[in-house]
Image (cartoon, rainbow, N blue to C red; front, side):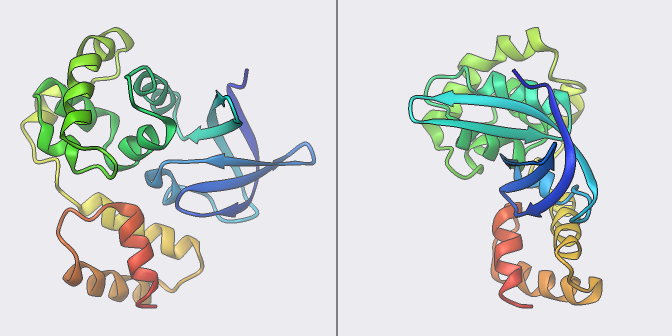
Length: 201
């Protein structure tokens, strides 16, 4: 129904945005990884849209690339995987990392995603291995599979960008992030890092 939505960013949080286009404000749910990439409030933004229809809700989900959207819709084909879990997976792992985890049967990496337990991780591996091949979502799988999926440098960068986007001073945000990282495990996810860091500012 929708391919993409381009308009003015009115509001943003780690999990959703409001974009005004044609005089209408659209609430769109996003992966946490997208939040750190957003333009400033009042600036133009473009998101690729997936319109998810459920019995009691019609919900828009937005992604920075068509590839991410395709991956999201592929994840929804797995039994027991709903939009919330699919968005969490994309927010925590890049499409390449997710593909690498699936092709290397890395249950541990998948289970680190909030809302994904061992059984769900196993189901993802069983049901997605062939589907990801067909959709072409897995570039450089071998290279990524050989690297640690728990590296958090990009998460820290995304968190810093998100805090600056919210109007916080870069130096203050960096100091707050450092305090947060001393309190949490190295595998802290982006949403938790941002939320916990805000308590130190």
